[in-house]
Length: 504
Image (cartoon, rainbow, N blue to C red; front, side):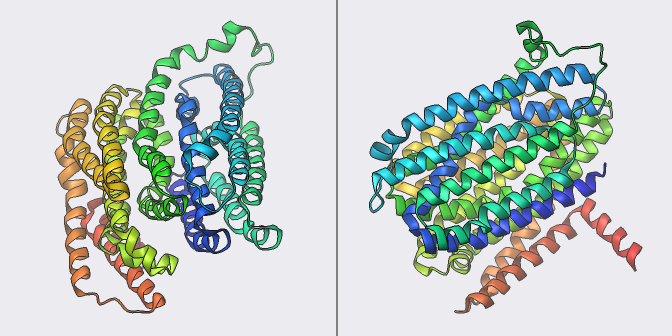
């Protein structure tokens, strides 16, 4: 399986999904209104908090699938693990989804700051959200199997199909059936059911066969046996994943209580735009994690470090240009996107801070991949504990005192501190001298030259009144920053030179 092809397929899918979401969002605002769109943002937050029930199982199944493909375990043990996880996922989905349905009335009446929508509408929408989230969460098990098998070309195509259903085909429903939250979330529930069926069907076809004389068995001992060796690793991931949810969703949860639902919708716009920095790097992690886990299982430590450093340059060359465009041209990006100059002016300061914070976060995620591949997450656990100890209190205080802009400052400061202080410690644990090579050689040039070019563009560009012309200037700035990043990266510069010589 081609690592390069997997990355390209993941990127094609991610770009398509991201572009559809970006282009369709103003249409959502038009037909649903900002308050109903605030429910869409709250839906995203609820889905993230539901991830607390994951207990590290989804990333664990991806890693164990990659290890099985690398010969670290046999077919029978792998199938027993999958069967145990299927039972656990179904049970948690029933409990978690049922609890969210039961709490829908309280959330509609006591948490959300609803102004124009009826409480009954909001309550029904929350119940539909809960069921849809349960279906999408079960689908994560099968998505992990497919990712661990490195079948990312198929997965990318399927993700694109689901995104088309979620974002595009919903428009005729909103126009001709109805634009109420109940209609929107009923449709999204049906799409979630289709997504689960598609992923489960494909994953089951790739499950390995085992000798007929062997049986999976249904005794409690056989159900728990494949999980016991993995419980410690899984719980470590679960804890760090829980911290991640607190880190990325605490501000959104608190603001959903403080802000009117319409204003919360505008805040969601800014954070969604900033999270694009992470969205465009996620495809790399999808291809990188199983390949690094396999290299470690095969004992190829030199290949593992080489892949890690090359992936670092690739992530930096993609994430940093996006981060710089959003930070330096926040108001212009929002105006071109939404066509609402007032919303752009209000949300730009939040977008600027969150974009820079996400830039640090994208780079800070890389050492986690190294620890994940080696199956040693102790430092990641400790680092995340320290991270959340500082972030959550400062985030809550900043949000209560200063609203959305306070959340932006807290997000940026804590992410920058984590990157500068904790990442060097992690690198020294795994390889002496790795950090300074990683920081100066793999990241330094890309960050410095990119910031200089972005600063010059900020000074030189005179922004026009036409959105189309402004869009061209934004795209030009992003392309120029990408070329600068490639030129500053030794790995990408070499690949670009070889590509040009081969095709000249």
